[in-house]
Length: 125
Image (cartoon, rainbow, N blue to C red):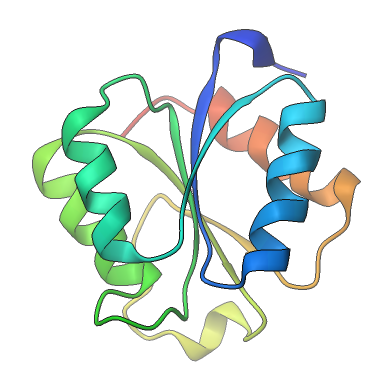
């Protein structure tokens, strides 16, 4: 596992219970977790917090900015590692961005932490 103590994750999930449980798992593993309930709020956070090491986002979210668009917009202004989550298969997204890890829902603690670790070990692109 990477040195979680020094890593900050931005978790973007519109489902409150999924957001809370995922944040608890990540925090228990030692990560600092900042939460947002939609893509617009996540973009605001990304603009003001340079400490974020990983953007971890659901793909389907209300409010006009889904996880794929969030990834594209975030990468216009900074290099950031990204992991996208969805209950739909990755193959169903024709515009899925490059250099992004996909984690299918539902996921368990082990698969979540393993995927986060894998993303954080990649060089940022």
